[in-house]
Image (cartoon, rainbow, N blue to C red; front, side, top):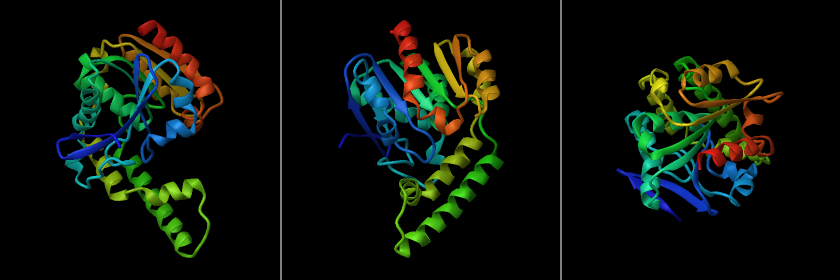
Length: 250
């Protein structure tokens, strides 16, 4: 299995397809498998070299429990480590939700390696510590309930199975690091890289539009009738915008 190492941390990745390289970053508590299961990979690998990676704390990558191991410049460094392992100089980078947050950090810390960025369901303004506290608490309650069901012999749904596999200590450490990191929203006006930003109508479009308005070169797409989950799982609606955008960039 393809791993690369950033310092002491192993980062898992997969590659398929041919064409301009497109690296895809998943959402919080998720993994690279999401892009296969939702059909994104199948809809893109005919025209692009699709690179998938599990962020540290997720999937098959290492999951440290120390918040210092999740500094945002380190998260960006994981992406660059994958590029270096593949011998790729510049990348088209796609990130959804938490993955979009990493994309902004890559634009801040390694702009020379970014050919273009596609960000869905996320602006550059970090969520508050209260929002992350609520998330961790809900995950903890949910995992305890699923664990009890599993130990009692109950049949688990795919979502429950996913919840059972989450390393809550790793996610908690990651959230603490993000909350204490410098505000990347202060840097977006200097990001002279082409961006495509998209968001569902029933997500937080004003937050994403704020970032779009601050960026020097941004295309903003509003997806009517979709919430946060739906907007990240509809390649039939999103991929045409991605391909049109990338055809201009590449």
